[in-house]
Length: 623
Image 1 (cartoon, helix red, strand yellow):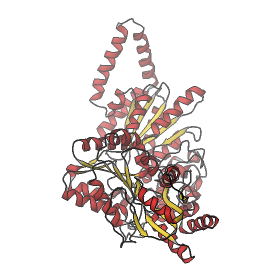
Image 2 (tube, helix red, strand yellow; image 1 turned 45 degrees about the vertical axis):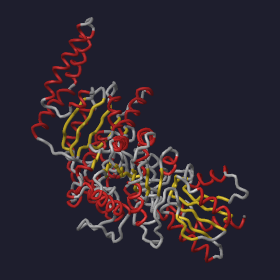
Image 3 (cartoon, helix red, strand yellow; image 1 turned 90 degrees about the vertical axis):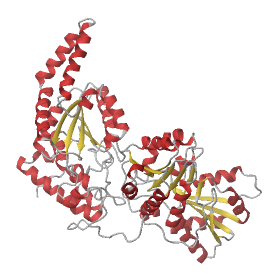
Image 4 (cartoon, rainbow, N blue to C red; image 1 turned 180 degrees about the vertical axis):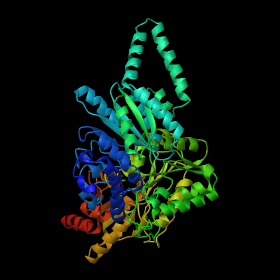
């Protein structure tokens, strides 16, 4: 196998040209085999095999810096830098990350995981290179989806002033190549990057600029005329008008063409966009036909592309999807907004039934929130469906545009808590902290699938800013006998005794149920409370519990700092009570949580039922 010859960085440069297509085929086969077994991001990686190979051939790693946007598509890069063995434990606890990680390899120059960041980070490297006097290439790879994020354009605006080489690879997997445009673009690209042309352009510009008054006007007029002609032929005028050279489009599966365009791009003294056309899922028919399904795939059968373990139980996203469809039928003021996550957040059915009331704003969470605020101000009932990790990108908009005006925007926060295999950048363990710091914001978390349904209906009719956070995975079907009406700011008492009180938030109610069962079997009296509301706190209940409980245990899938438990402790510290109970907060420690199975992560964090029982018994005996 040709792949066997790749042991470390730059080994690809030692291959014969005839071996490159074979290597691309073997890489695809390898990725399909490994991801079918362990799960991971398949479609995006299959689409960037040749592109990654070409960059490794054109540039010198780790000296040169490749910054991957998001990083879903970095698997081939990991293979070509000697991490083949790491795929055995890809995205498993203690194993190789599914994203670029500086601690893994010197060839990973920047940790990524969220979208639209690579141009900013790459520009930082390019500017630092000028300051330090070093000599290396900087290449930022960004997808056409990530280019919908406003941060990318902020970076492009800044990059347009750069006077040294900076290559931006625009990986476009959502359009075809036109031979005519490609041919003309190649010709003009060669002309613009030829040494003679570059030298002539600089010489003429410098000479004209020396002519007082008239010289500058002549330069501007020439540029306008040239741009007007190019506008007829070149699809990259957006970049050209910003002062950034555009090359392409080029076939992202033609290594020879890619190497040529990278040589041309390296000649530009400034920022240059290389527009590359790729096919998502290339080489594996199920992924080509259903790229969204194979974006982040669970283990699957290679022959059919079907999951090894088909879902038999609805997850929380499914419940949200069903309720939104029903609400859309009942109330024509209900509208839904997502940031490029129609399928992931469960809004596909709403979109199909009410297309005029569904808005996908692209990867632009800040815009999504302020857009929702505008809809709310105009009298509609917007529901913003977003992953917890991504909502934190819009903190200012939540605070400034929604909550200051007390607008009725509903935030449906999926993937809240520990999400597992995607690791630090995707764990939804901060939302309770950052949302509870904002005045006018209310926060709920359901214990099971029926309560999520009730909470969404409550939130849509609430009339003020409100957030519902729910976890990834199967919706809990236990405790269905407990279904009190949602009353603002009130918790739900599931079991009442004296001694120990368990106050659990959302997904941790299931764990608390297990904890109570174990404590009861050990002879410890224990109450179980479903907090329901993280903000506002049910202060009346807290006072009631303080009367006959010596230990209150708060349980949440959120960092301890600024979370539910800290707010409960703060309430008691300021309360005028003769006796205040001891508070034990079960939460994520002040740290980033790596990738791995959620149950393993909970055990490592001391948040599984067994670990929680041990902590409670130790504190209770001491008391």
